[in-house]
Amino acid sequence: MKIIAVCGVGIGTSAILKVNAERALDRLGLSADVDASDLAGIAAAAADAQVILTSSELADAVRAAVGRSFAEIVEVSNYFDVEEISTKLETSLG
Amino acid sequence: MTLPPLPDEAIVLGAHVDDWRGAVREAGRALVRSGSTRSEYADRMIAVIEEFGAYVVIAPGLALAHARPGPDVRAEGLAVVTLAEPVPFGHPHNDPVRVVVGLAVSNAEEHVASVARLANAFNDSGIVGRIAKAETADELRAMLGFDREAEA
Image (tube, rainbow over all chains, first blue to last red; front, side):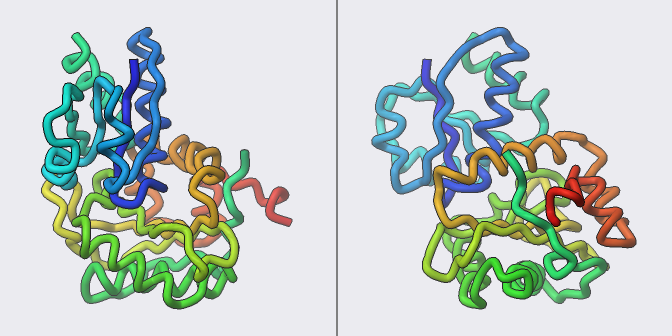
């Protein structure tokens, strides 16, 4: 399973999201590769991904960039809230 | 896996700013003072928000201002600015912002470890409120888990 954390420039915020998504997966007892990407590279990065994690602010841009893809887009409000990320990932993967 | 140093020059407590651009500029000036970036980096951090929106407000009250690596980044660096009066960045859930963390990295791959440590500090849900009220640079460094000896 592959998850992409995406932000505008592919550093900083997507890295934090990646780290906390990995914590959320641990908590859920799931294993997946989590990669960080910028918006420009998201279509390629998400080609074989199941889930894209991003901010609600970027969700529309992500949707437009990936076009028709099987990856589900999950919007995270608080990047430091592992509980929020766990709940949303569980819903999305379950 | 260490955070870039957070010297006194990179910390601004109780800054008075008019709007989010002013808040990001404070972080930009702090990164210049600490030797991490040149002044153009602040313009690039503002441009990221103008282009992509307020997604940099990654938690309630906290903005992580940053831009891509570039020639205006001299060394990986971190700055922390607390605001005397919170300002809105335009985020639907996490406004207003009380703490701005400025991040400059020279290489997109190498920064993940240091950001992971930053994530550790901020995973404590009460920390943004406490940082916003920090009265000294030492107090703020302690909250973020900076080891003073490691900076020397």
